[in-house]
Length: 453
Image (cartoon, rainbow, N blue to C red; front, side, top):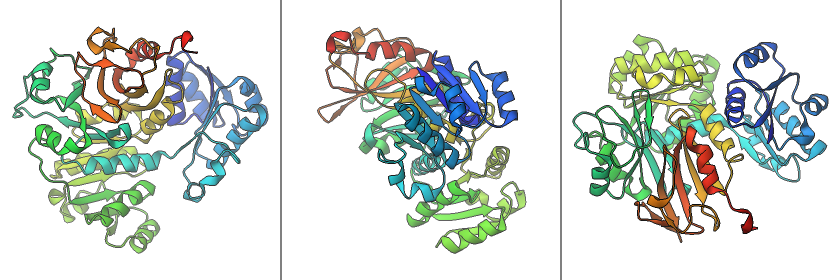
């Protein structure tokens, strides 16, 4: 499949690298010479130096043979024009654009089939804010993801040595807690899709799923004694994400403060927000954090446009006694280390973007895809088709590749936490968790045989 990616920033290069690793035919277009140089040094894809909104550049990229155009430059206008040209020149089957400006997002009719005809609109900042809101409302959680339309919750916790499930094997855990399935473990630098013999160890980052209405039980089981939701928040950075967090938090009655460097932006926030306390200052200022009683704060969320500042703020706040720190981090080299240096949660708009796009290239009847744990794992929601290799067979008899498991099944609107004896039926909705190296084999299992048609 030919994929044309317009924009070689962090998001564009991440998508290009992922698709290239899966043997897709990738063409990357970038106007900035420095980004072109960096992309050529780090990617094994065709790179064209030029504007993605230029008809001639798109023709050079092979727009007539492209099955997908993904426009993720820093300009909404360039992204929209590129997709418009792609549609008028060759009727590209799938068109994806990153759109950030609220003026455009508030008038979504321009994106429908009668106008720009976009298949997917990406707003990474909005997705990141929504994910942070989910995390901060679950006591002590390191990650929270909704699956199956919100009926299934995935929650991540770090196991303390005092936890009564430490040293238990997954088989024992499953016997005691059948409504909860541990689907992944992050141990040091190792990512594990567990089997029945996998032991749980102190300091593991454990990712478990359960029914949404059973989330409180999961919190009591894995939450290390955390019983109440956070109520006091400090948000560092009053940009789009900070504002998108403060508004719903104050509406829900939480105690919220925003620290914003830019005085004009701080003045706007103070005028627009009703109950949030807005401070003009630097979130990396130790004395300012101490003055604002950081030790008595439940959660600090650092969401400025400066990743290094976000990391420093989160680390400083932890040293000063904040209970939970969340930092907005996008660079892969930073993202891979934050959990090892003391930051509780790292949220990446880049990964949110990748998750949304993945479902457009996955084979089989894929309903959605979520990239988890810094892209190490994918959670795939899929529909079991009649002639695929997984139907009418018990899970224990299906040759799933190492590094993959079925975490949940929905049949006739009933959510089941499966065992090895559970038989997959046609039209079952499955949630499969898999390491990236296992994805290709999972796709083969899900593919419909020709006789189906």
